[in-house]
Length: 372
Image 1 (cartoon, helix red, strand yellow):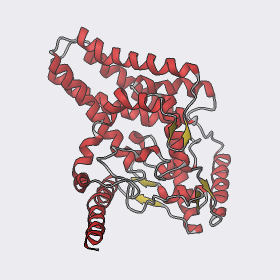
Image 2: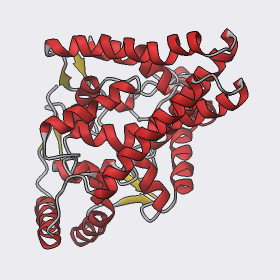
Image 3: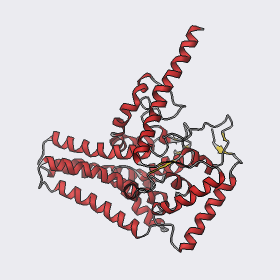
Image 4: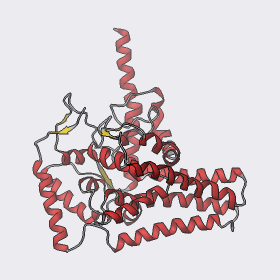
């Protein structure tokens, strides 16, 4: 089913917010792309990754300090994905397509695949946000974690608000070892055709995966004086740290209180404009936090990111004031949690709603059917 946004209400909202944003950049006489802050973050996180990896592979430390460094390295890899790769793959890091392409390879170096992410995230998720069977991001852990009302309920999901966070820890490991291969060879990802890839992307998929496995599995086993179980512990710890950071930040953007999960009509129509749909399905958190801004790469400004994915994330704090004021003026939702903790609590409540509360509703319907 082809989804189309046919809403006529609030059409003036996006026109006005775009005009206000354009005026901001013109008045400030600044580029929409990376600035000095962005370049500093890029150098900082990439240097931190190289430095930590070098310290671990040097074989100078005992296994316990290396374990601590492996955990930090996992988190740093997530921050590289947020702060460097994400903007580059969106084409918002630089006005140069070549620069964006080169920097997008940072995603491949941390074990993922930039091409698969482009299809799944840029095309499917950003177009069909929170629409079941069209937004690939709603497939968190099929059969175990339910994050939309349209997903099939199973009894184990009564407890998902407790175990979902543990499953998030394996997001990175799944990405590196399984997910990219599965997604690459799927004919469709969400509502997007995925049947044809440029030939170079077949090479990139297997070459960079092999490079990652060499750097993070083969070399440590060769050059570091540790036992197999110490290596396994470090490798898992690195990915658990990375996966938890990835899982939490991504889920807090769309599965919190106030966000909607609209289902298209039989003809595929969504009765909202695309921009208002984004406002109804996307949430910010910790807009005023310097730490969240620095670490999350603008992903705590998801509202602004979904409206303007072609603008580098370092500009989002300023743009958020424009977007919020314009949304209030037009009576459009602007969903946000004041702090990271508030967003975390809100996500917990949504997990409980789609698990425990949904299970009661389903069981009641089944009991009534059996009684009839």
